[in-house]
Length: 333
Image 1 (cartoon, rainbow, N blue to C red):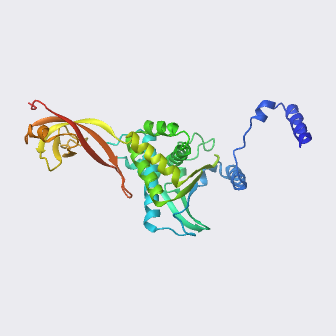
Image 2: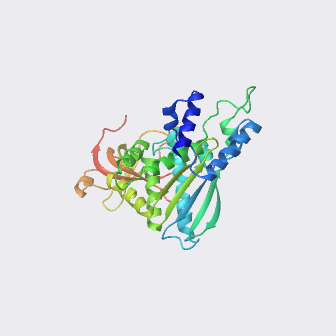
Image 3: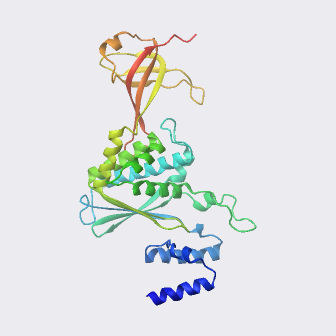
């Protein structure tokens, strides 16, 4: 083997290839399947001008104690897949600059991050094959082929979202969770709430998952997450309140009671010029004596802790608000 290495190094020197560059080289494939895919994509690129005509594809393999042979509870698998899709969309929203939990995710983001599903059994597991639902060629090359071929592709949001999702799950470590926490904080409350819901569902269902993603002309991305690691990551987010934030709600009291939620008609209008809808706030840290100082039609500012909550099937998180303090504001003229 040493003689082979020496002959190869001599050949590289004759070809003018830097020896250190060779020693640092890491192949972009890990399995025979990766190598086969690279070969097919190279041939396709020659024939079609771009390997992008091949659809991206991935898989979510569910196994662990929650799977018996190749079967599992339908509602558990369905909930995991629904929350997985929600997380892909939430990551896409962050990429496109819509990471705040307030405001709807643009329809274009939802469209470009939708995944199609094909379920298959495998020994001791369930394999869910996933592909982008949108036309990737139309997204990457909206102008079609130019005079010089397929140039300057735009990002395909489903690919970018899956890439970041796998990167995020790859940072989960029961030895050092802080890099993961830093990534979750940076992405904002919407993504944190969606991720937390998925992690809890995986832990509660006792599912381990293997996620893979194959984007044309890029290395296959892979990550494995155990039920135990999902539980640890979930509690790490929960204990740090990463998925909540504080804000002020200013408006006119509609309902105030020691037994009901505080209802505030907030100042301002939405983007269509309509009155903002009533905001419902749990009394939280407000005492009976705090509430007794205010009446219906008083104008107040309530400082609240807002926590997005998302359930399987939800596109938008429900915002749960809890009062931290309240003060009187002068009526608007």
